Image (cartoon, rainbow, N blue to C red):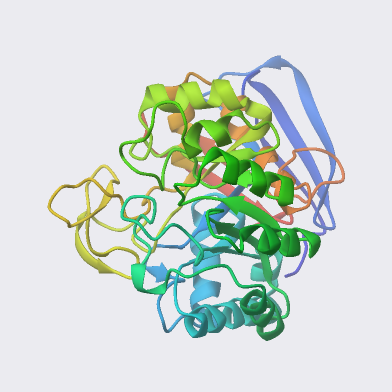
Length: 389
């Protein structure tokens, strides 16, 4: 993509309300100037680094887990992500046959090669599965027919076919092959995450020793009823070596649970993801989806499987910016801290992105928010200093 030559972006600093002027040259932030006094919030929108989403299955009708995903699907999804305020994202593929996973990986890599915008936004791919727990509950909406043990040979086939585009893998560490698999992936520079699991605390500890460093959407992808003393939830929450992602959409986690988990894990080891599916941003109604099959999307953004109980969620339907608002509204965070869990914290896993500072990529968003909005209103998005909306 063509990088902006020289431009300036104006807005307000979250928290202080000071007027900000960001100087951009060659796609990078050259300087950030702050006014001495705060200005009324009604003047300009809040200005922040672009959001970073490490778990995107699809959005706005574009489905990465459809068997016929194409490079054009990925290109369209990237534009939809920009329109939602996300400037960096990980296309996320859930449990499927090896042939389907490989086709999707090849399509994503082709989009990165053909489209500079996608190449800029997508550093690598997140594969969520297929080595997850097979039981109802921890498996979530992943298809049981394709759950299988971790295989180094299969991972290497993914990488060979796609030009090594896989950079994160989520698995359950209960499999006997898990330690060797995790060690191999971590040794290859791939981030290993734990999720969709009912593993024992000992198995969680083994996985961390082998190189796992992330908990995928902690608090979800588990049994509804767990042992109150020994369970995979406490084991992951207590391990300071694991950074936890949370789905802060107001549906996946109760407010009190989200608040307690953030306090326990600490903001320095926490981040939020959208876990958005292709139905994200779509009208409420009944759908047939690649994740979950027959599902219902409520007007409030709850996406649930039509199993008669409304117990199991089928991914999420709200954008990451809604998660920032949820953190303020339900977890008691200030806006700067909430934004940090959607920018700098996930940015640690994609090369240090997500900072509003000189020398950083000029990936920026500006938005209005009156605290009552479920989704704050975007008024500007810049990718490499280039205005995108």
